[in-house]
Amino acid sequence: MTSKFGLSVALATPFDSDGNIAIEAMIAQARRCLAAGCSSVTLFGTTGEGSSIGSQERERVLAAFLDAGIAAKNIIVGVLVDAAEDAAMQAGQALSLGARNILLAPPSYFKNVSDDGVFQWFSAVFALLGDKARDIIVYNLPSMTMVPLTVSLIGRLKTAFPNIVTGVKDSAGDWPYTESLLKAHGDLIILVGDERHLARAVRLGGQGAISGMANFAPRELRPLAEEGRDDSRVEDFVVEILKHPVIPAVKAMIARTASEEIWISVRPPLVSISGEAQTQLALAFDHLFRSKAA
Image (cartoon, rainbow, N blue to C red; front, side, top):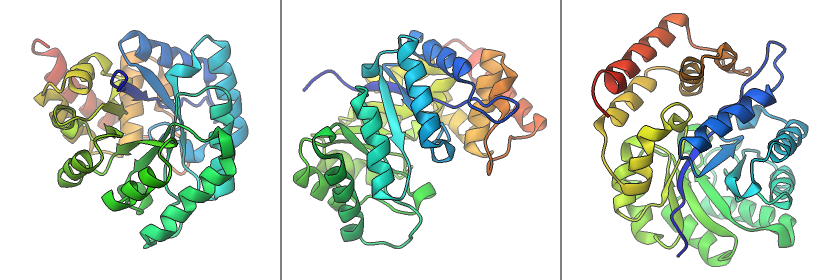
Protein backbone atom coordinates (compact mmCIF):
# COMPACT_ATOMS: atom_id res chain seq x y z
CA MET A 1 0.00 0.00 0.00
CA THR A 2 1.16 3.54 -0.68
CA SER A 3 1.64 6.05 2.12
CA LYS A 4 -1.34 6.93 4.28
CA PHE A 5 -3.84 9.49 3.11
CA GLY A 6 -3.15 11.79 6.06
CA LEU A 7 -5.01 14.99 6.88
CA SER A 8 -7.02 16.79 4.21
CA VAL A 9 -8.62 20.09 5.11
CA ALA A 10 -12.31 20.25 4.22
CA LEU A 11 -11.74 23.73 2.89
CA ALA A 12 -14.39 26.32 3.65
CA THR A 13 -15.51 28.69 0.89
CA PRO A 14 -15.36 32.46 1.52
CA PHE A 15 -17.94 34.79 -0.02
CA ASP A 16 -17.62 38.51 -0.66
CA SER A 17 -20.26 41.13 0.12
CA ASP A 18 -22.04 40.34 -3.17
CA GLY A 19 -22.19 36.64 -2.37
CA ASN A 20 -19.52 35.66 -4.89
CA ILE A 21 -16.71 33.26 -4.07
CA ALA A 22 -13.65 35.16 -2.85
CA ILE A 23 -11.20 33.01 -4.74
CA GLU A 24 -7.99 34.73 -3.62
CA ALA A 25 -8.95 34.35 0.05
CA MET A 26 -9.81 30.72 -0.61
CA ILE A 27 -6.42 30.05 -2.22
CA ALA A 28 -4.64 31.80 0.65
CA GLN A 29 -6.48 29.60 3.15
CA ALA A 30 -5.53 26.49 1.19
CA ARG A 31 -1.89 27.54 1.24
CA ARG A 32 -1.98 28.14 4.99
CA CYS A 33 -3.41 24.68 5.59
CA LEU A 34 -0.92 22.95 3.30
CA ALA A 35 1.95 24.84 4.92
CA ALA A 36 0.70 23.69 8.34
CA GLY A 37 0.98 20.05 7.30
CA CYS A 38 -2.26 19.12 5.57
CA SER A 39 -1.55 16.62 2.80
CA SER A 40 -4.33 17.94 0.57
CA VAL A 41 -7.29 20.29 0.33
CA THR A 42 -10.84 19.12 -0.27
CA LEU A 43 -12.92 21.62 -2.22
CA PHE A 44 -16.73 21.81 -2.33
CA GLY A 45 -17.38 19.32 0.45
CA THR A 46 -19.93 19.81 3.21
CA THR A 47 -17.81 22.38 5.08
CA GLY A 48 -17.16 24.05 1.73
CA GLU A 49 -20.92 24.45 1.15
CA GLY A 50 -20.44 22.40 -2.01
CA SER A 51 -24.13 21.76 -2.56
CA SER A 52 -24.62 25.55 -2.91
CA ILE A 53 -21.86 26.07 -5.47
CA GLY A 54 -22.66 25.82 -9.17
CA SER A 55 -20.76 24.01 -11.87
CA GLN A 56 -19.43 27.19 -13.51
CA GLU A 57 -18.20 28.48 -10.14
CA ARG A 58 -16.48 25.16 -9.50
CA GLU A 59 -14.73 25.37 -12.85
CA ARG A 60 -13.47 28.89 -12.10
CA VAL A 61 -12.21 27.92 -8.64
CA LEU A 62 -10.41 24.82 -9.89
CA ALA A 63 -8.75 26.77 -12.69
CA ALA A 64 -7.65 29.48 -10.25
CA PHE A 65 -6.18 26.93 -7.83
CA LEU A 66 -4.15 25.30 -10.59
CA ASP A 67 -3.04 28.67 -11.95
CA ALA A 68 -1.92 29.60 -8.43
CA GLY A 69 0.39 26.59 -8.37
CA ILE A 70 -1.59 24.33 -6.06
CA ALA A 71 -0.93 20.93 -7.56
CA ALA A 72 -3.87 18.84 -8.75
CA LYS A 73 -2.42 15.88 -6.84
CA ASN A 74 -3.14 17.85 -3.65
CA ILE A 75 -6.76 18.60 -4.54
CA ILE A 76 -9.81 16.47 -3.71
CA VAL A 77 -13.17 17.57 -5.07
CA GLY A 78 -16.53 17.01 -3.42
CA VAL A 79 -19.59 16.17 -5.51
CA LEU A 80 -22.92 16.60 -3.68
CA VAL A 81 -25.69 16.42 -6.29
CA ASP A 82 -28.66 14.17 -7.00
CA ALA A 83 -28.71 13.64 -10.77
CA ALA A 84 -26.23 11.03 -11.99
CA GLU A 85 -25.56 13.18 -15.06
CA ASP A 86 -24.62 16.18 -12.89
CA ALA A 87 -22.47 14.04 -10.62
CA ALA A 88 -20.58 12.58 -13.58
CA MET A 89 -20.12 16.00 -15.13
CA GLN A 90 -18.70 17.57 -11.96
CA ALA A 91 -16.53 14.56 -11.16
CA GLY A 92 -15.30 14.28 -14.74
CA GLN A 93 -14.37 17.96 -14.82
CA ALA A 94 -12.15 17.55 -11.75
CA LEU A 95 -10.67 14.20 -12.76
CA SER A 96 -9.75 15.55 -16.20
CA LEU A 97 -7.72 18.25 -14.45
CA GLY A 98 -5.85 15.61 -12.44
CA ALA A 99 -7.63 15.86 -9.08
CA ARG A 100 -6.37 13.34 -6.56
CA ASN A 101 -9.80 12.02 -5.57
CA ILE A 102 -13.51 12.65 -5.86
CA LEU A 103 -15.54 12.70 -2.65
CA LEU A 104 -18.90 11.46 -3.92
CA ALA A 105 -22.04 11.61 -1.78
CA PRO A 106 -25.14 9.56 -2.58
CA PRO A 107 -28.23 11.31 -3.96
CA SER A 108 -30.22 12.75 -1.09
CA TYR A 109 -33.54 14.20 -2.27
CA PHE A 110 -35.38 10.87 -2.08
CA LYS A 111 -35.42 9.35 1.41
CA ASN A 112 -35.83 5.76 2.60
CA VAL A 113 -34.26 4.39 -0.56
CA SER A 114 -32.85 0.87 -0.78
CA ASP A 115 -29.24 -0.25 -1.05
CA ASP A 116 -30.14 -1.55 -4.51
CA GLY A 117 -31.27 1.88 -5.61
CA VAL A 118 -28.18 3.62 -4.25
CA PHE A 119 -25.94 0.99 -5.85
CA GLN A 120 -27.63 1.59 -9.19
CA TRP A 121 -27.13 5.35 -8.84
CA PHE A 122 -23.40 4.99 -8.23
CA SER A 123 -23.24 2.51 -11.12
CA ALA A 124 -24.90 5.07 -13.41
CA VAL A 125 -22.41 7.78 -12.40
CA PHE A 126 -19.45 5.50 -13.11
CA ALA A 127 -20.91 4.43 -16.45
CA LEU A 128 -21.30 8.07 -17.48
CA LEU A 129 -17.73 8.80 -16.38
CA GLY A 130 -16.44 5.94 -18.51
CA ASP A 131 -12.66 5.72 -18.61
CA LYS A 132 -12.35 8.87 -16.48
CA ALA A 133 -13.69 7.01 -13.45
CA ARG A 134 -11.02 6.54 -10.77
CA ASP A 135 -10.15 7.28 -7.14
CA ILE A 136 -13.70 7.70 -5.84
CA ILE A 137 -14.17 8.14 -2.10
CA VAL A 138 -17.81 7.46 -1.30
CA TYR A 139 -19.23 9.73 1.37
CA ASN A 140 -21.30 8.47 4.28
CA LEU A 141 -23.01 11.45 5.90
CA PRO A 142 -26.52 10.30 6.88
CA SER A 143 -27.15 13.26 9.19
CA MET A 144 -27.24 15.45 6.06
CA THR A 145 -28.18 13.09 3.22
CA MET A 146 -30.52 10.75 5.16
CA VAL A 147 -29.07 8.06 2.87
CA PRO A 148 -26.68 5.86 4.87
CA LEU A 149 -24.06 3.84 3.04
CA THR A 150 -24.26 0.46 4.74
CA VAL A 151 -21.22 -1.72 5.25
CA SER A 152 -22.72 -4.28 2.86
CA LEU A 153 -23.43 -1.66 0.18
CA ILE A 154 -19.83 -0.49 0.34
CA GLY A 155 -18.78 -4.10 -0.11
CA ARG A 156 -20.92 -4.34 -3.25
CA LEU A 157 -19.44 -1.15 -4.65
CA LYS A 158 -15.90 -2.25 -3.84
CA THR A 159 -16.40 -5.60 -5.53
CA ALA A 160 -18.17 -4.23 -8.61
CA PHE A 161 -15.81 -1.27 -9.11
CA PRO A 162 -12.44 -2.35 -7.68
CA ASN A 163 -10.39 0.24 -9.55
CA ILE A 164 -12.88 3.04 -9.07
CA VAL A 165 -14.20 2.94 -5.49
CA THR A 166 -11.01 3.27 -3.48
CA GLY A 167 -12.17 4.80 -0.21
CA VAL A 168 -14.90 5.84 2.20
CA LYS A 169 -15.30 9.04 4.17
CA ASP A 170 -17.33 8.21 7.23
CA SER A 171 -18.93 11.23 8.86
CA ALA A 172 -21.78 9.39 10.56
CA GLY A 173 -20.35 9.93 14.04
CA ASP A 174 -21.36 6.36 14.91
CA TRP A 175 -18.39 4.49 16.36
CA PRO A 176 -19.83 0.94 16.04
CA TYR A 177 -20.42 1.63 12.33
CA THR A 178 -16.90 3.00 11.90
CA GLU A 179 -15.43 -0.01 13.65
CA SER A 180 -17.43 -2.39 11.43
CA LEU A 181 -16.32 -0.48 8.34
CA LEU A 182 -12.66 -0.76 9.31
CA LYS A 183 -12.98 -4.48 10.00
CA ALA A 184 -14.85 -5.27 6.77
CA HIS A 185 -13.13 -2.90 4.36
CA GLY A 186 -9.68 -2.17 5.68
CA ASP A 187 -8.36 -2.60 2.15
CA LEU A 188 -10.04 0.72 1.28
CA ILE A 189 -8.92 4.20 2.31
CA ILE A 190 -11.10 4.72 5.37
CA LEU A 191 -11.33 8.35 6.45
CA VAL A 192 -13.15 9.68 9.49
CA GLY A 193 -14.96 13.00 9.53
CA ASP A 194 -15.86 13.07 13.23
CA GLU A 195 -12.63 14.18 14.90
CA ARG A 196 -13.75 12.62 18.20
CA HIS A 197 -13.30 9.16 16.64
CA LEU A 198 -10.30 9.92 14.47
CA ALA A 199 -7.35 8.75 16.56
CA ARG A 200 -9.07 5.49 17.52
CA ALA A 201 -9.93 4.79 13.88
CA VAL A 202 -6.36 5.41 12.75
CA ARG A 203 -5.08 2.96 15.34
CA LEU A 204 -7.39 0.34 13.80
CA GLY A 205 -6.19 0.96 10.26
CA GLY A 206 -7.90 4.18 9.21
CA GLN A 207 -5.82 6.31 6.88
CA GLY A 208 -6.66 9.78 8.10
CA ALA A 209 -9.35 12.40 7.76
CA ILE A 210 -11.04 15.03 5.67
CA SER A 211 -11.63 17.53 8.46
CA GLY A 212 -13.42 20.84 8.80
CA MET A 213 -11.53 21.58 12.00
CA ALA A 214 -8.29 21.44 9.99
CA ASN A 215 -9.26 24.87 8.66
CA PHE A 216 -8.20 26.44 11.95
CA ALA A 217 -6.31 23.77 13.92
CA PRO A 218 -4.33 21.70 11.38
CA ARG A 219 -1.23 21.30 13.55
CA GLU A 220 -3.31 20.05 16.46
CA LEU A 221 -5.10 17.51 14.26
CA ARG A 222 -2.11 16.04 12.44
CA PRO A 223 -1.03 13.72 15.30
CA LEU A 224 -4.55 12.26 15.41
CA ALA A 225 -4.79 11.75 11.64
CA GLU A 226 -1.26 10.53 11.05
CA GLU A 227 -0.30 8.72 14.25
CA GLY A 228 -3.59 7.88 15.95
CA ARG A 229 -2.58 9.95 18.96
CA ASP A 230 -5.44 10.91 21.29
CA ASP A 231 -6.01 14.55 22.19
CA SER A 232 -8.90 15.26 24.55
CA ARG A 233 -8.77 18.96 23.62
CA VAL A 234 -9.87 18.15 20.08
CA GLU A 235 -12.74 16.00 21.31
CA ASP A 236 -13.83 18.72 23.74
CA PHE A 237 -13.78 21.41 21.08
CA VAL A 238 -15.87 19.31 18.70
CA VAL A 239 -18.49 19.26 21.46
CA GLU A 240 -18.32 23.07 21.58
CA ILE A 241 -18.72 23.36 17.80
CA LEU A 242 -21.74 21.06 17.87
CA LYS A 243 -23.54 23.53 20.11
CA HIS A 244 -23.87 25.72 17.00
CA PRO A 245 -24.63 25.20 13.30
CA VAL A 246 -21.39 23.54 12.27
CA ILE A 247 -20.48 25.21 8.98
CA PRO A 248 -21.03 28.80 10.20
CA ALA A 249 -19.15 27.89 13.40
CA VAL A 250 -16.14 26.60 11.47
CA LYS A 251 -16.13 29.73 9.32
CA ALA A 252 -16.27 31.93 12.41
CA MET A 253 -13.16 30.20 13.72
CA ILE A 254 -11.37 30.72 10.39
CA ALA A 255 -12.29 34.41 10.52
CA ARG A 256 -10.70 34.62 13.94
CA THR A 257 -7.53 32.66 13.23
CA ALA A 258 -6.97 34.29 9.82
CA SER A 259 -8.09 37.75 11.02
CA GLU A 260 -10.34 38.05 7.96
CA GLU A 261 -13.99 38.94 8.49
CA ILE A 262 -14.89 37.73 5.00
CA TRP A 263 -15.01 34.20 6.38
CA ILE A 264 -18.06 34.94 8.54
CA SER A 265 -20.38 34.95 5.51
CA VAL A 266 -22.21 31.82 4.42
CA ARG A 267 -24.41 31.25 1.39
CA PRO A 268 -28.19 30.92 1.80
CA PRO A 269 -30.00 28.93 3.04
CA LEU A 270 -27.35 28.98 5.80
CA VAL A 271 -26.97 32.01 8.05
CA SER A 272 -23.98 33.15 10.10
CA ILE A 273 -23.82 32.54 13.83
CA SER A 274 -24.24 35.50 16.17
CA GLY A 275 -21.41 37.60 17.54
CA GLU A 276 -22.15 36.15 20.97
CA ALA A 277 -21.76 32.61 19.62
CA GLN A 278 -18.52 33.60 17.91
CA THR A 279 -17.18 34.87 21.21
CA GLN A 280 -18.23 31.71 23.03
CA LEU A 281 -16.37 29.57 20.50
CA ALA A 282 -13.27 31.72 20.65
CA LEU A 283 -13.16 31.57 24.45
CA ALA A 284 -13.62 27.79 24.42
CA PHE A 285 -10.84 27.39 21.86
CA ASP A 286 -8.44 29.57 23.82
CA HIS A 287 -9.23 27.75 27.05
CA LEU A 288 -8.48 24.38 25.47
CA PHE A 289 -5.58 25.15 23.16
CA ARG A 290 -3.97 28.36 24.33
CA SER A 291 -4.04 28.15 28.12
CA LYS A 292 -2.01 24.93 28.39
CA ALA A 293 0.93 23.45 26.57
CA ALA A 294 0.18 21.60 23.33
